Length: 530
Image 1 (spheres, rainbow, N blue to C red):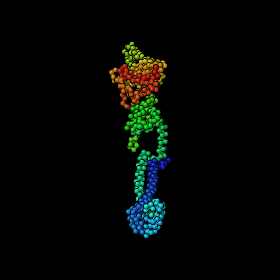
Image 2 (cartoon, rainbow, N blue to C red):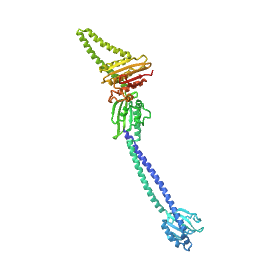
Image 3 (tube, one colour):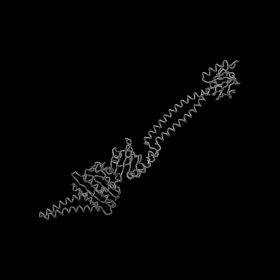
């Protein structure tokens, strides 16, 4: 199968060079032809004007009039006419009688013979010019009258041979030819430079190859299931396929706009315009959890921009959150099993020591505490998955020396929120709260659930260091990568972005403020306002 390169007839740059050279050549040839025609006309017009001027000068000369009054005009007119001819550079000056008899001629043997050529209206006092083949060959000549008072007494004819005119024309055309050659050279050089630049920009491809490449690339880029962004070296969007527009909620006029103007998470923007490749970083943009990979794009060792690929992992991230909850519950159950084994050994030892009453009190006391905790959590939250999550978090908090309290009640008829979203909201908020109070003197976390009508409200407070006003404004919208350094105090990361995403999905909101415990308070409202 022949290659694409072998199928093309010629590169666009080569075709443009050929076309431009032909255009320049045609223009130069046309210009030279017009210049030659114009020069020929001007040379002949100039020769006729010069012949008329010389003839009038001779006709108006007193020498001519006094010589004509003599018995032999040629004696005085011939030397005078020759001096004028030599001084003015014309080829002949002929003074003649009205009957055409020559008084002067460059060839003395022609004196006395009739003038050859037309006289026009010169005998009547007019000025006549023509191109005529006479005794000296073809010439541009003029005939003017000689007046004695108001009467025409003789005629003067002055001529310039066509050979002399053509000599002047050839000199003019030589200059025209030199100018044409310079123009042609400059035009060809300019066409070559333009072609060279075009070759670099089109990489030497032909028009069919470029059209085929555009059609194939456009079809592929818009058909792939991954989002694709192409940015130039200035961070301007050059291409965004359909999936990228959907995942990032990009406008239709995104091409040509700076990536900084699109309202994307700052971390994602920084990765897109960065100088180093990034692989499989997680960001939150709008309602989507995205796995983003970016890499600088180069061509011929030159930076031309960046390529950003996007994959939608929203569902996968939610399932991963649930899996983390299950793993947490498993770890809690494992710890409780170990603790139960210790308690059982204690009970057995008390019985062996003959102290059964104390063994019964010890066993029932632990059971009562566990049952009270279970009853309180289950009564507050009717959803078994969420109740199991809260019980697991309570056990985890107890192991870490943190006091976790669960209060409130979800009334019947409250907004119907899937257990998956509740696990996402409560799990991430409690984890952030536990991390925030870790290592502090007062380690308390309070969870309050409640609602009225179609509204469900979840409040998670802690005794940690709290959030600054700036962090409180931006913590839910940053969408930082999970590979970034976590900030336990601020609770930054994908988790909080997922909380905001889940709240918006159910028509709710997330408010952040100070807590009565001394730290931060996250208030999540789901459903419409009451």
